[in-house]
Length: 142
Image (cartoon, rainbow, N blue to C red):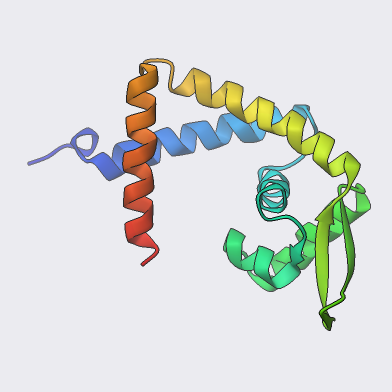
């Protein structure tokens, strides 16, 4: 019988949980945001201004949770929310300059945690792991 540590998905889960916990703890200190706030800022940095519903879908968040998250980011002036000029029924969310600076700081924190977590691997092994994990992830989203 296979042990838990012999199961790839279990080991990936354990690594993910440890990394996520460390990232959340460090982000809370500097720049003072939550992991979900970082995820929203990262999604906006990747996509550019987007409809709030599209952001919720991209993050896998329930719309009511997305409203709460956006309210937090708006309060901290990390994002702006304006009516979408193409559809006045929707809101479009965009990073503010403060949001962009916060994201840049947070991205550095996340990179340090990732570097520490993956330090046993060579650069080639890291690239291979990312490629393989991306392939598995793509298979899940079909």
